[in-house]
Length: 484
Image: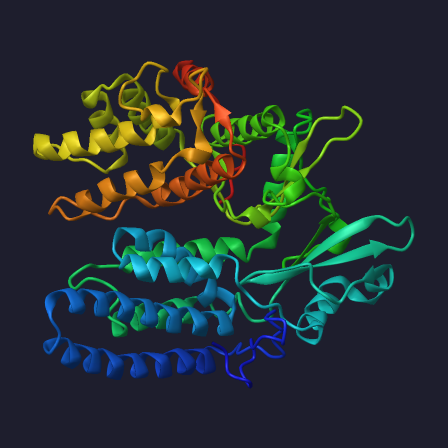
């Protein structure tokens, strides 16, 4: 719970109030996290001593609670600091499923959508420097943000000349310059809090996080991705992509048209009939398949804040509004081809094919015991469960409706697959997966959650098979954007 003088304390209604100042200098940010690490070290020693006097069951419960408290302290401090260190905490929740205690992953995941905004006086100078007086005078800007994240926040605005409704995304001051220092300090902090297993080299994880952060503060790159998605989907009436307004954009500010829509959990969306919800879910799934298999260009942050549902009126179709392309990743054709082999093998129950694809990606190696390969193959087959044939006996009967469609909202597949992955991680052949896998599966998990939230009932096997058939064609296509 936040203290009364905490910059992210809550108002009487429990809403997080805005942060009036940011620690932007590397030294003060490092000092804040170092203080946290020193305090954590003392608590770890006290916890270890206490455990000597506890029984086995009580000790296990105490360990879980300890890890949860440690992670909560870490998450709270990262939330206060904002910027790259908070975003790094979010990304650690992705990688963390492979090496952190589940209690820590659960708490760090909360950083995804529980962040306080920054007051207008902090971000206004950034906007003024980026746009200049002339362009600022052309706009009416609401000083209360409509969305706040770790690296920046968005404000609604109106262009005076024609009333065009705009959304202005403003980067927090100093976050780009603090990335390298933040990552070094956070890696030390993670070791001090003893949340990582002994002997595990997490340097590659932090190298990937550092690279991804530099991408996400590059608003010019995000602008190119936004325009690329808009071009790709220009003729597809199921989707809406905001239009970039170049006159009001820079390397620290990105302005687009404001596109209205409802949250997927809004009662109006949840109350749609099954046919409409299925159409939305099928569109969302087909978009993901196109992004990865056809375009090699995936928006890898599936947070629900990045999507809105625009309900159709007077027989008009419902549409999905796509927002925020800062986390877009490019996938090489070699990776896509090998991953396609894994998926084909999983659909056909061909373990040799799964192994060939996994070896091409770097997950498997020649000489692995057959039992390890078989366990991995079974996990892959489980992951493609929603695309299994209608008569596949391995799909729980309660997850099929009367027509044989897969009931996404009733499925506990992520938990079942997670348990299998956790067991596999305990073998000596375990290694952190390639970074492409981590971010691809981040989006894949988002697809599952979206279709489950919409309570879709779909038979999507043919959709996936058509996509894979295109990959087998000589001209499967190249990545849509070269963002080097």
